[in-house]
Length: 85
Length: 407
Image (cartoon, rainbow over all chains, first blue to last red):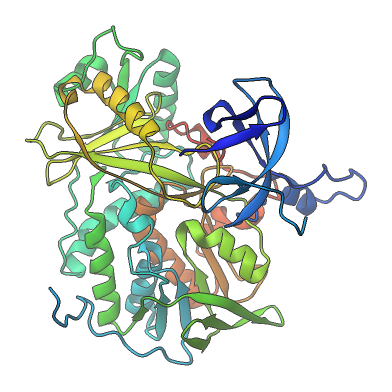
């Protein structure tokens, strides 16, 4: 699957240089008041968006940076940050 | 070709305004559940709603391999039953499903893998499933085309040989089940998209479609790779699923050379010769979630490299077709089959990853039992959704194929 990803340091590179790091679910939840359900939500649950999602990537075969991009999961193309966000 | 024709499963009925049960997804799991609901439980007022045409998704895109050599004690008996249902269904549906129990050969490429295979084999034998450990020489005797020399990237140490497995013609299963279900009165509505699910007081009351509203007390979500997105968009229920595109391809047809399914976790490749003579072979999943079902040259190259080493006689053979489908992967590589929690009358059947085809008959049988009685059969209890928050994930990740949700 062809994908070009824009690394903040190395700019546009072939997607196979990167490792997918999961959809961006926000910061790790506070330990205070944490229930098994809310922890499970953070760790396992996905919305499986058919459309644009914000996600983490790791430049494995490159500079080693972790960063987020927006990608459309139905076309597999990187997109600009949506207006709503 | 351009004349009027009616489907094998009879005329398309009109969509009624109410049904006893509505099944979302006209794939194998949906059709099998409808069939068993009508056959075993007298619930014949069932609608199967399919957005495109039956068998569009995973049902027609898998590589038709069936087996019961999984890893854990919860999964193995389930797949064993699924395997035993093929001859019965062939007879009962009066439709040739072309079940060919040629046996599966799962190749091992290290001593560590041989030990892992010993454990899997012990589990299988404990549950009364035939499975043996064989060495490289015995592999060569079973499949003379196999390369057991030392000079390949991953030399073959031996294999887990599982004789009762094999291949089934997947399209025939779709058509056979559709025919069988319709005969019992099930309505199959193709080109009917679900647009919403109505819930009142935590109970299912209706399903909205682009052809009108259906009142129903029971809904089964069995939309394969699309299930997780439907679950979140229509009910706000998130699932522990990642949806990945997985690719497969076939070569030009050849004379019989491969009379077993050969697979290798290390090479990330499996191959079987279809009854038409093509070598059907499967490959990686995309390493990031997407719904594209697009294919890539990247994996054709990978597949060619793997096959050329394992089965050198295939060097120079051309790939003829290449396609992809969706796999909905869970963190523990086991499916989610649950119901009445948190919404009464709402049943889910998803997270099958690449096990959807081999399991369809058993899934249909037990889910029908679940939907008819409202009580979860013992066989399905371990597959509940709450196992993730209880941190009781199954050990299927220890199975001998190394796929994972993030690949």
